[in-house]
Length: 90
Image 1 (cartoon, rainbow, N blue to C red):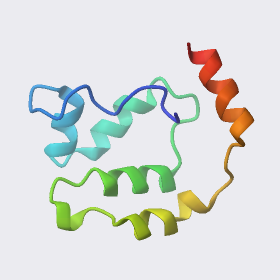
Image 2: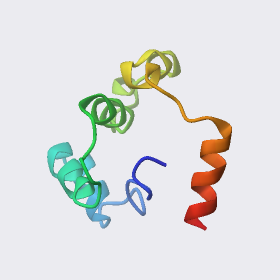
Image 3: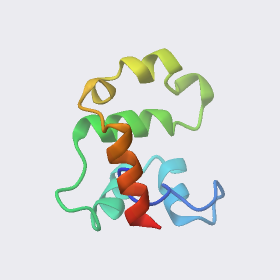
């Protein structure tokens, strides 16, 4: 919902965005995704998703880590705001 599109099409080496993540090039991944995002992404958001995208399962955040992450503690959209956003995107 934040970016308006999935992070990559397929989790395969032929997908350029997945290749950035799997090749430890998160900097290029985020630069590419931020081009279409006015104002870019917060450091907390980048930190959260980059940690969730780790290829080695033991290095990924646990559910408790995700819930406790600073980005997750920020403001949240109401159910009405979420519905309205999805209606706009149809």
